[in-house]
Length: 359
Image (cartoon, rainbow, N blue to C red; front, side, top):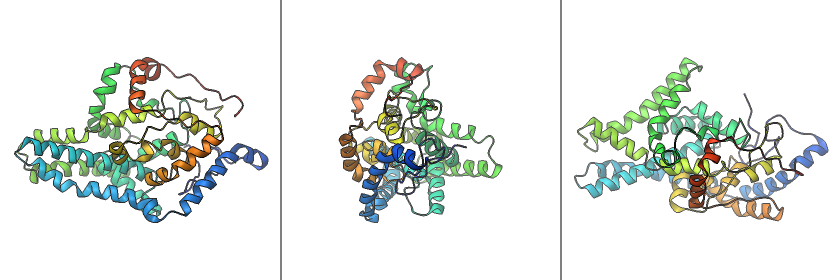
């Protein structure tokens, strides 16, 4: 199993991004001098930050999402179409905050300083709320995507590609099926795992799905099981389009590297990651680390969303001073690019980039 680089809770890279071990002596100084200098600047900001800044703000946003759910269930039980629509919006937004922002923070252990609680939150957010398996989710995201960002065959985001789908179907229709596809994919990943782990995952996923269904029947007053299931699908799919878009916009179409000739970590992340501009809706529902601070997140993956936002000026200024890329593009610009170059980006194999002079 490939190991993730040891960055610690505050983003302290000790080894190379391949996870193959630490370089020694002058070689290590040369390979990581830029990354180490940037890390010291970021650590200074982290040390000067309060608990509220490090974790409190993001925990408060997650708590607000949970606290909005009772109102959503009551609104869905209204006889007025406008109030029902408002209930769908409130529940769909709360679900997005919990399952996108919450699962992402939990997978990185950014909700607690305790490793035991990190595991509890990962199971709760990823399995109960997100309908996926925590063990597979954390391994795929942390130990593959982050450790091998834009490395062909490892962390190249190819899992998001479905080449046989036409571009309009993939970009605008297929994402609506994410709530159905996710638990099915989770079940397919349970083969080869222990019976105890598989049973826990099935029970946790079932608990999350049935809890929402039960509340729609008994609190919202839905008389038809089919209507309750349809409401669940609508609420869970409300933000599926931007979820899929964000995941492909920020890596695919950027330089991809060979596993045998990967660049230094700081070059790998600055060339292979892109930030989208600030967006109040997506920032709150997805989290800053997935939207406007994705570069910062890949450089320092254990920082919370709010801390990624706080260190953003430090990181962007440093990278520009050192003449390193700090890639940014708008949501609509990326959507236009992917729509017009769908075959090149989402069907054909990407070319390998070699960063001459910085290897």
